[in-house]
Image 1 (tube, rainbow, N blue to C red):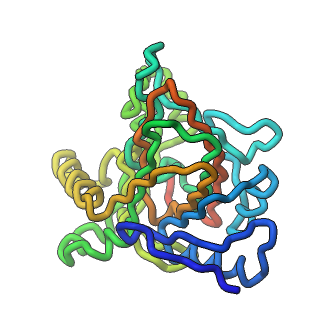
Image 2: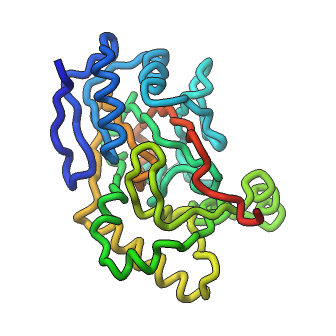
Length: 287
């Protein structure tokens, strides 16, 4: 029996029903792969996964990778992240909002950003903790023809240090040099084609994207602001309200996501696997 699906709000993807990770047929796996290629986000509710099954499900879509800047890993399973709240100045105030992360696509400051991710809710907070998603393929498809033409061949620089500073880290020159040595500046096309599906998307990652190559700084800032403003309009943003044992899968080549944060008095535990890229999407700036 084929997997059943329904459309998620804002046309960001689909919710899948009748998905039994303990009893997946070859036809189920084939349909699962097609859904991943055809959508920004896939939601499966009430799916209890052991770490082994989480990895097995990841392998149905590709090769699990080890995140290069992990803030935590599940003991015995280096491919499974247990994300920790970002920030340096987390106070002892139980009402302090932690885990807030701006809009981004994962690891765009590397030449080979991951193809996707599988994030499962192990323990959800009583308040907050939502994750926002945007289908940047839909955003691109609805851009004015003149704007599409303007950005078609543009390249943009993505930097990890830029992202760290936006997250509130006080990165001095020495620290910036060390980070840049490990993660040199990378250029990514503003218009990106998914090599797996051929889908074209708007390739912005506001957390890491600093400027457009060969464009005057003021013009670059204005264009990036315009694109971000368009992409983050309410009509495109799906806010996922997590339930226990939700599994959300996103295609990183066509998805922006962000974390709303939650009061630190409430625990939030998520398990995440990452799908390795099968080919480079960007280039080193110096290359």
